[in-house]
Length: 146
Image 1 (cartoon, helix red, strand yellow):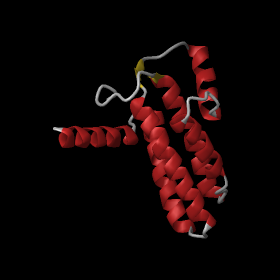
Image 2 (cartoon, rainbow, N blue to C red):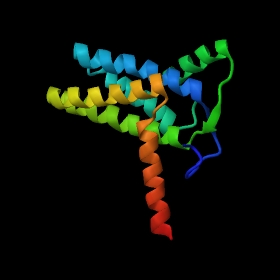
Image 3 (spheres, rainbow, N blue to C red):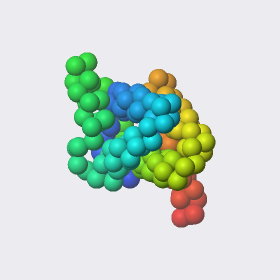
């Protein structure tokens, strides 16, 4: 999946990504179930750090890397799709937080369910929905440039 449209030379450890997705699934599910919408502000900051900066300060990434150090390195792939996925996660977290702050809890709940489903697909099965969207976006860019 990372071979198409590599926008970075960075590599991502697949195990770190999957463990990170499982760590995201928990607060997304908890926030939606308990109406703790403020957790999405924290997730937005975490996704911002991963998607828009090179700072290694993302708490979720740090925990996932720590867990992976215990079991050894995993397979590497181009990080471009994962960086794109982090930007989508930032956008989703921010929109959910803003929608919930405006009192629209049902739309926030629906979006949270979609977000939790995407995190679960990545964490449990290695299926990155945003990465497929990334391929589509890159393919459309190649068609327009020809």
